[in-house]
Amino acid sequence: MSYEMIAILMFSSMMVLLISGQRVFAAIGFVAAGSALLLYGQGGIEMPFSQTFKLFNWFPMLTLPLFIYMGYVLSESGIAEDLYRMLHVWFGRRRGGLAIGTIAMMVIISAMNGLSVAGMAIGATIALPEMLRRGYDKVLITGVVQGGSSLGILVPPSVVMVLYGMIARQPVSQLWLAGVVPALLMATMFVIYIVVRCRLNPELAPTVSDEELNMPMSEKLALLRAGIIPFFIFFTMTGLFVMGYTSLVESAAVGATSATLAAAFKRRINLKMLHETARKTLAISCMFLWLILAALAFGAVFDGLGAVRAIESLFITNWDLSPWEVIIMMQISFIIMGMFLDDTAMLVIVAPLYIPLVKILGFDLVWFGVLYTMTCQIAYITPPFGYNLFLMRALAPKEIGLADIYRSIWPFVAMIALTIALVMIFPQLALWLPQTFRGY
Image (cartoon, rainbow, N blue to C red):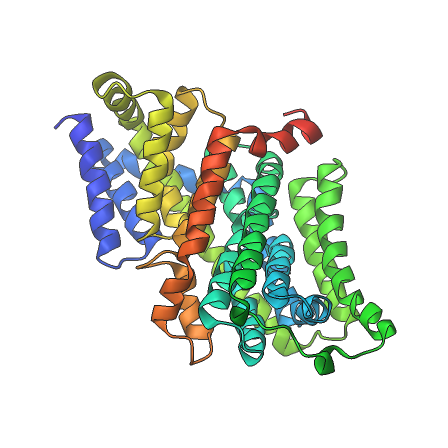
């Protein structure tokens, strides 16, 4: 059997296992270990075994549980809820102000935890009921929460970018900086969309009554303190890192420690909160660890077969595609896969094929990492298997149905796709910050 057929058999076997409902890390790891044994005999077991020690020797792996812990501490301690109350008071008088404030809250929460799931949980349980109670259109605000929560994987400290950086062997600091401008551009698009829609149809977003917001200016200013803690944590963590005072792992430790101290300052630390935070942190961290291990093992076998060279020959020699046409095909495949797989599954499937090919074609792997991450945002909110869709259905009030959730996401998918196109046309949108701050 030719190497090309072996590569196709490996890839198709993995897809069959994924479609059958097997866990992502189990399906990919099983194909990797089984293929190594069949191809190289008993010595093949050393391949996935060696990847395990390679994984344990990666010090950046320590950042994952620290960032995840930080996000859950801020969520479980109610600091995020205080933040929303502040935004509610300061934005409530504007048409669509609560929806705009929700986008702002999502950006801040994203900058605190780096995960989409935490932002979605906070938005669905805190922001949605408040906006529904004030007469906001349920389809509009459902899309706002889902679109805003997707920013969590693009704004630093993005956990998805940490995973990409580990697998693609790219500096996480450059990836974080590269994601800032596209994330702010996307958030700006979301705000403009809300403003335009609410002006065209004021019934979608009534203003908050004066009675609810009738409070002395001293109380309003006091509410601003709710935003001090999140900003302090974010700028302490990322500022020290960007200025070169701390390493990536040290920066994550600063963030986790700052979040714990903030919760203690608010007198919201107790055994129940710590137990729940530790349990969720351990569950998410172990899932990521297994996924990275499976991806490394699969990539080692796949690359050993010369599959990357075969794909390069197919695209460049046989199909005579230009480098940009290859990138566009990759993005289309990401969007299609994103309708059925989550971001980590997409990464471990395509990393052995796409990342070496992108490097061969002469494109910047940091820039490509931003494109991949933005496409993951589409994966989170597109049917039929978008994770955020199911999470929203589980957490949203009963008056919001699945049909409302599906209808709400398409304008935000279009805006994310537009941002992807802009970053492809103008790569400096992603590369300007890394080049400015680190001489990348």
